[in-house]
Length: 336
Image 1 (spheres, rainbow, N blue to C red):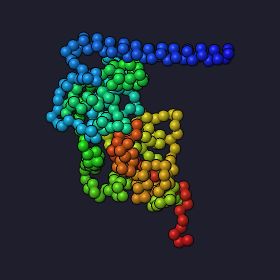
Image 2 (cartoon, rainbow, N blue to C red):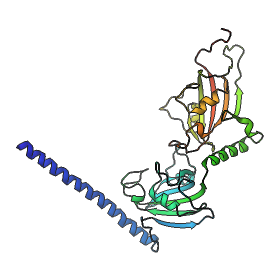
Image 3 (cartoon, rainbow, N blue to C red):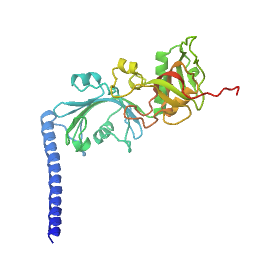
């Protein structure tokens, strides 16, 4: 009987705690909306929100088309709270000014799919961009229910209204054509004397391929790489704007101010034709030799594709600088 009463008390306590938490959440959101209304009455008294609660000011309406579902949007932005504290931006200058600069962040226009169901932008941005033509500049002011809600984000407190200043640079209907444009522009600007078609081998663009100098006393000579070989190499991976997203070369990391003392900078071993690395590595290595220094472009089809990663956008061609050392497996003698 005593045990039954104890369980009853715990149950009552749990229910009261649940409603108490719900009340706190409701009050936090209610307080936020009151603060947002006060902010708007002072700064934008004549502005009317959309039915969802989004306020928007179009500073400059572009002359392009409006985006439709499935388009990709290329845009710059700066995001702040109502106290003008910037918590995220695509501008390196703005990041420095607001003391949020990080060497690990790629300060460049974002590339997002519009109205993507699986990995959507916050609701306020999706709605806001639907109101803009390509080339537009605007400000979106939104309550937390259209932004990050009850979650913390980049130092932003839960139930924070946010302000986004955006510059919609391009609307891209064909991301594959856009990627090819990026590759063509990179080659044209950096290798103007090259014929692009002549650089393409097995879907990979081989931009530079230089055999290392080998002393006469060294036994290991350069040799072609074939399927099944296990190759040691150093790499540096960049986007087409030269931003370094990863390397296992300590000198490159130090030069680009991305050195991390907690990680090892050792050669990796790649089994040609195997798994564990992007397919582009296999395609490139089968057309290269050991004891060489190489620079290639790997299209997204053979890298991170339409999904991208946290640091690599969808449809991003990758520039890889490879320093190929040697094979760690024994290559059979053809004469045997």
